[in-house]
Image 1 (cartoon, rainbow, N blue to C red):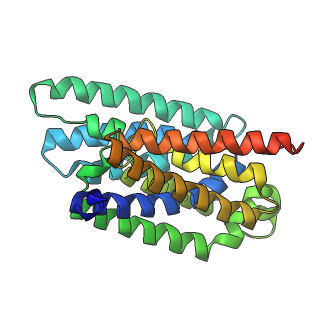
Image 2 (cartoon, rainbow, N blue to C red; image 1 turned 45 degrees about the vertical axis):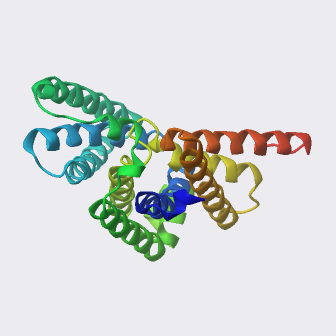
Length: 269
């Protein structure tokens, strides 16, 4: 197809494959720790950073990434303050992020603030600067997951036992949140803030329906994610569909098919 010869589509494929690889790998840890909603929270905060970047005339994706990281620190601080109601931290930061983004959008009405691409994704407009940033974040996330895989695995299944065994629980919780912030910060340009959490959660939902072990679920989530990203981008490019939405809808379709097949086999998730 001619579209594969276009540089914008080649950049889109590279960026999509990178995000499609690191998002579900981190998403497995988030889903199994019941932190699925943290992606939406950090995405809303990132949009506030993007809006501020437009207002200040600074690289919006970098400001959004900074806001996402700062929000990760705030979430961990609130989680420690409300140990019994830890989910409050996510609700509070999400509310603050939406409010701040709305406020900045209002301030920017007289400016050229093209934030639509960050809300709904605009992977075809990825620049080489965006792509290098995505690659850098991918390498950081992959390295951290490899180095701390055992510790994060133990925390995921039993935080109390992990703490007793001497694992630095607070530091690793903060690391997980920061890594999520990094992924969200660079992924909003690819699938959009309104859809970005789907890359963290839906491939994991697919894998949990068929996986026989934790490691098995990690690899299956990765396969589902890459199939949806590549297939969705190609379909969107050929038929002129919205790329971010097409990728997420393909993920949902894969999940439905997986659950139907599993249901016919008589198995339960």
